[in-house]
Each structure stands twice: as structure tokens, then as C-alpha cells.
View 1: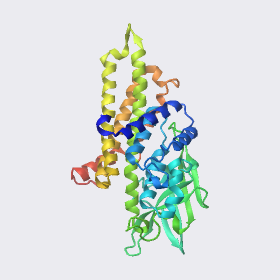
View 2: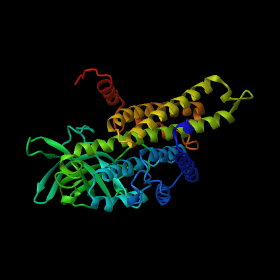
View 3: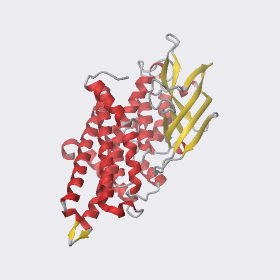
View 4: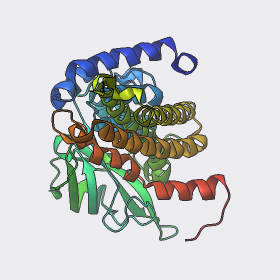
Length: 387
């Protein structure tokens, strides 16, 4: 499959990242892995070369996350910092914003979190209540965000807010870069059962004062309407499609890791003089898990290709499908891996039990599978809405 869909450079990238992942393994030190991946240029493969990136796209970045996940050391902030925030700033930021943020995002010396989800709105951009109002040349940002990954290790958070349209009185999305130590910008950790190096936070913004250049794109309109106050919705969805592709990569990597552990065990574990992997009751479910992961990867590659080609509409449909397929495939692969090992599948030694919770993330975040089914039924199949 990869010989048909990946270039020589992409296959070389996959091999190199896989080797990096094997060196660090599932007991990795997150900071050390992040630093080395940044120095090797893997964190910024999707960002423009003129700002220190690799000049590739989400296709290349998804390869990085998938292979690290397959080695047991997925970096969740890859979904957020270079994929969402880096993409939004590269596409819509002012020149000053690009110069300030992209080189650091590319080499890993700077990290950015992403705040969209709210307690009462989820990630529904039409119900977001975090609002920004002008105060002279500054902005005042007020609201709450939840389930924001890695705020404690991020230099800034890209916050989705809304401003009032003076023509219509309606609120419209806008994106702001909020540095970590900005007065009024408070964070509180959310206790999670999820085993992950990156913590989750609730954010409170109480009249957070931001300069005019904190608004992505700057001004009312920038770069032919692609930035600033009039283009927040365009910016938002330009970041959400890569988020779905990268969530699929995360899920596929985790599923591959679990499957690999189960296959090793099934080849070696012997009962009645025969390895358990010789029995179809063990072999067939593992084969099905492999097929499901490969099919999900195909859709992920399609979504990444469409996005990198500039087809945002086509990428939106494919990215949602890829995220759905990968989430389902990951959960099934992890479940079957644990089942294959039996009691050993729940021990710390084999490290599979921790994946049971992690695998559910791809079903839930950044959008639930039910909302993806709504999207496909309405947008693709043309069925009426129930809401």
C-alpha cells in the first residue's frame, strides 16, 4: 500500500521516525523525545521552509505522529502545536506573527496550545461564549475553556473567541494568541484517568488584555480577507481539518502499537504445544484489527492529500471519515490485544491496559463519532437534520 501512495521521501521519513520512536520506546521521557524530534526537523515538517519548517504538509506530519504512536510514544501536542496552531498562523497570520511563532513551533523550542471547547458549548463554534471586545487599540477577552491540552508546557494558547459584528450585532469567531503569563489568564488542571504526559486544563479568562497584534491575521481584514476579524470561521476550520487528520494518525499509531504487542505474544505464548496465534479464534480477530487499521490509514492519507492540495471542502469530509474510522479501529485493536494477552494484558509489564482509556480519546475528541455521523448524513448523504 505504501509503495503506491507514498513518495520515496515520505517512506524515508516514516523509516527515520520509526527508528527514533524505537530508541525512545513506551517508557520515553516526553521532553527528551520532543526536543530530539524538533532538532531532527520532524515537528515542523508541515510548516513553510522560509520559517524553519520542512515545507511539507499534514501528510508528512501525520506520518511522524503515526510512527511515534506505533513505537509506543505518541506526542499528543503534535496534534495541537504544529498541526492546528502552526497551520493557522502559517496560512492566516501576519508576517510579524509568522516570524515570531513559526520558527519555534518548527524546531520545538516553542509550543502552543489550542482552546476551543467550553463547558456549555463543547466545540460548537456557534455557541461559544468567550467574547472579545475592543478597548482602544487593545482587546479584552473573557470566557472559559475546558479540556485544553498542555497549557502548562505551552508558551501561548490559541484561543477561539467571538467578537460582535457592528453591522449585524451577531457574534463571529476570532482567534487570539494568548501568552501563558498574561494577567487574567488562569489555568486549573483537570484530574483525568487518562495516562498521558500532557495534562488537561480548564482556562479562565477574566478581561484578559491583549494588544491588537494578538488577533490572528491582524486588523479587520488581511491577505485578501483570509485573516483578522472577518475571517475567524475560515481560520478555525483550516485548523480543525488537520486536527481530525492528526487524531486519526494518533489512533492508528496507538492501534498499531497494541496490535504489535499482541502479535509478539501470540507467536510466543504456547498452550498444548502450539503457539496461541495458530488458533483461528486468536488469529482472525487480530487479522481483522490489522485490516481495519489499514483501511483507516487509507482514508487518513486521502484526507491529508486533499488538505495539502488546497481542497478544504473535500478534506473536511475525508478528515471526519478518517477520524471516525481510525477511532473505531483503534478501540477494537486495543481491546483485542488486551484480550489476546488475557491477564497479562492488564499488567504494567506489558503496558496495554493504559491504552484502553487512551484509545477512547479518538472516539470522543475532538468531535464525537455521533457528530461525525451527523455530518456525513447531512453533508454527504443530503438527509434532513433532526436539530
